Image (cartoon, rainbow, N blue to C red; front, side, top):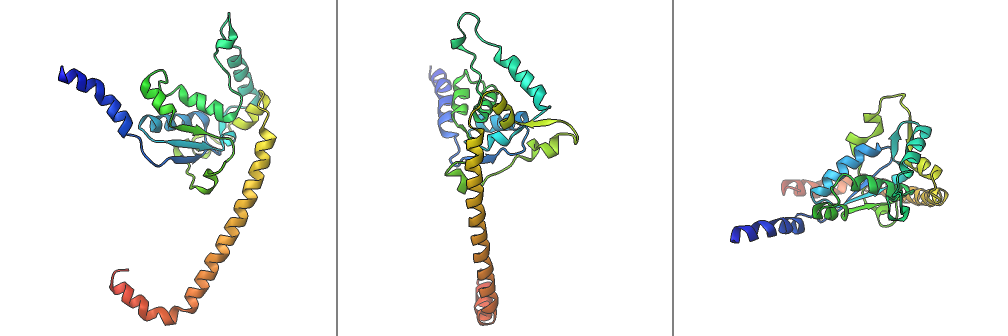
Amino acid sequence: MFCKQFVSVFPKILLSTMVLEKPIVIDCRDHLHGRLASIVAKELLAGQKVVLVRCEEMVISGSLVRNQTKYAQFRAKHMNTNPERGPFHFRSPARIVWRTIRGMVHQKTARGQAAIGRLSTFEGIPHPYDKMKRKVIPAALRVVRLKPGRNFCKLGDLANNVGWKHKELVDRLEDKRRAKSEAFFQKKKAAAALKAKAEEAAAGELAKVNETLAAAGY
């Protein structure tokens, strides 16, 4: 009796304690849609929180016309007697990516529901992720995985052509963010140059101090 109870409780304990604290922020720009989704799905199932930004910059292999045709076929799939019951066809890039990953984590199980709950997807880079370190996935990059000369299209362009209405707004907000980021970087670079100049000017005075610190292991 004790063994049966322990087996039934143990998966719940694992799910509650396995979640990692710090989320990973991934910049989706120029990543292949399916390859990135599969890698993220594995991380979510392992307990990692993942945030995907700039989903509209993700790419799909194949031309825009080909992918529009495939999406049109996908949109035709619905419940015959009551289409309001689904399946639901998202048009924003962030939700398209979210739905793709949902299909890779067995979302009808408790484990899959917990995994998809760890995922956040966004168009652009909203606050506070604009001030956090963003990562790329080399195994999913287009320049690594797609043969040169092959056709591809951006997910944002596809979404815009199938009914997404916020492409111009996201582009405008991204331009503002990039300008702000550039100003911050130039300020940071100038401060670093001043610090290096000050250290060089005081190198003679600090020689003895540096020797003492080096001897102490600093």
